[in-house]
Picture 1 (tube, rainbow, N blue to C red):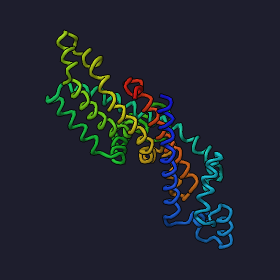
Picture 2 (cartoon, rainbow, N blue to C red):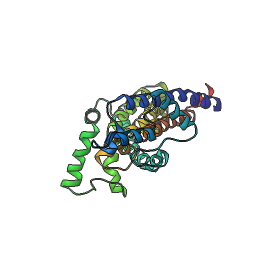
Picture 3 (cartoon, rainbow, N blue to C red):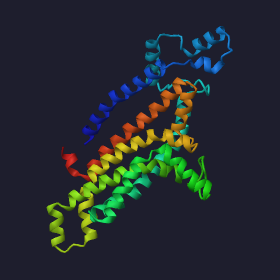
Picture 4 (cartoon, helix red, strand yellow):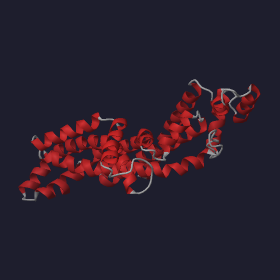
Length: 306
């Protein structure tokens, strides 16, 4: 098991290198001059050249690339142009807010998807099943940037139940978590439904029912644990997507996390800060996938044997 975990960890290193390389090249190739944006259009050419030299932007792209990875090897993520401070403390200070939002969105998703998927599978072909399918399609069709403002207009402005933006108590978390978790809940509901339908048609379920075991016990004691493997796969993959998807949601609700920080870094052409945001998101995605592999071994002992 440990060997399997170490192998998966080694496989993630090329993926991290490729992600960081692509981000480095993309943000340096796109048009725009961060030095000009920092000093303004009326800045003198001498001042522009001096700041560009101080930031190392006058060096060839290959030299900047090598220095960037040398810094990462030393734990140095660079220095933010906008905040004039090291990138790592800035990013790590914002990361708990993004993690809190992602976990809350995942909790909302699981609270909706698992009961709805099991119920829909149990009532396959009924009106309730068709209604569940309709709402899952609706959840998949409405993007975050549309759902968020709708929830703000209805629940915050019109009714006044919840705060519009910012980070505070539970009330500030409900709307962004619901916005972020809605699409994932729709996907996961369909996955739970499909897995449960497959398990409920299995021979061991028919045997359990023939023995007179209650339907609730058949559903949650026998069928549901065996239906968890594909569900865990989707949850693991989508949780990583939640971390990346916070960019839109955090911007809508002014949530002080990594996503909003990345948007600010893009607007300011702050190369090191944007690279730091992408790095922490990529590391989180890799960590979630490794954790998913460990959960596989707990849920299904056959994974350990392989």
